[in-house]
Length: 122
Image 1: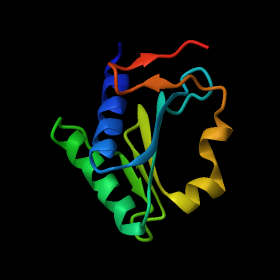
Image 2: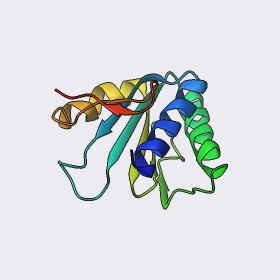
Image 3: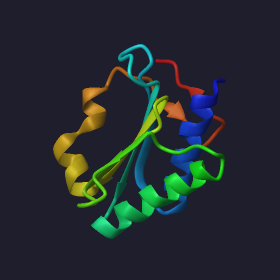
């Protein structure tokens, strides 16, 4: 297991700790070269999205990891935290339904982030 998968799963658990919804960790290593994993989570309101993103950033900061880039904080409809090896997308539920990011990456294996981060084989 690589460090980036551990950190992506930590991000997913942090989102879960703030009642993030529909949390997924996608293994995109075989599909794109810019990152290894996508973490996708939803919140029910702009404030909830911001709270989830803040908790993810805090959990990783506590491990000495800071995002290389953060986008979307001004509107809190889709906050992107780019940690280079993995990218966290926190969506307002309406935005997630609109963009359907996980459908774009339907070929990406799902990672079981709650049970030790094992990649599910298809």
